[in-house]
Image: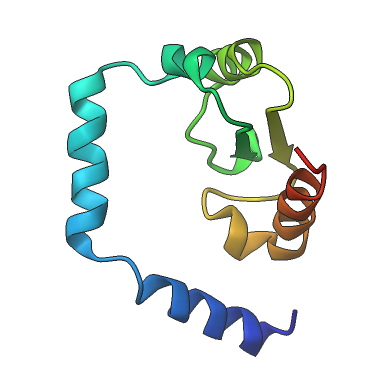
Length: 107
């Protein structure tokens, strides 16, 4: 995807999420407590994507190992090398390849 197309895609996506929606996600999360233990309760295929740990991943090594241990097949945990916290912005092509691959498994 060309740089201008990527920029338009990001602008379009950001216009569809309200501040209230983001705040409510964090408020709901706080009610649940620790999130990682809840991964083992997921009943749907789930993809967890992590940024390169050297470039700003929010999941440290212990948390990443826990994510991998708690997800059951056909869920997946993937780290994208060279991606910073905003994975879709810094490694868009690789991010889309991972997402497309996961979605095209036919799960």
